Image (cartoon, rainbow, N blue to C red):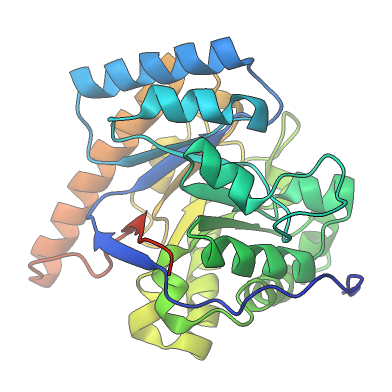
Length: 306
């Protein structure tokens, strides 16, 4: 793995969030370079109306392009929707033409930030070391990181996918305070499964990779903390295949792409997945005699910065 060029230091990650447990799946989408401000606002308002009319047991989040971030945050205000940015720089300011900072994102009212997406790694040369700097910067500013990881088709074909994913997890979380792990969501998105030409992944194989990710976290931070980290799947998720992931015990939610560009399609995925997960969870509890799920997803609310 090639090392990145030296980047400015950022503060070591320290406690800054108050976490609140919710027994619900996390389901979200990134619009990538799609939707104008007007389209983004209309979509958000429509989705809010739909979810209000038919409440679901799911935490839903949107990642609009930066030009529409403020409009979406405003449209989502007062609703259960959570909003985030698709990327950010590790520095607060400076000569980084075209970049946005954590401060820019927070000023818009966003709570989350996506980091390390496969397309950014491939098209813009973003390395694991840079992703780590961004993770620590996001946490330092009270933003909840959504860290994207996943192997390429070549790495899969050469049977090194597990090693690659484990490496990405370890580097992304380097220097993160154990108390901050529940504030982080990891999205497993194998490069060969995303995009219009992506190949659908087998749910059992996805579940196994999620288990590996959790084991890697557990090896460094312990089982108790690793069980609090939320791991979602994204890779050509559609309304047709979303339900196949609902009964996979290590898949804590979905990161939907093109299938979420239309409100009705995204709302259907949210509803059907959350209902299927609720049935699966209830059945599991009865089988094991548990009163509560093994793992509770985190909803993160930044506390005032000191």
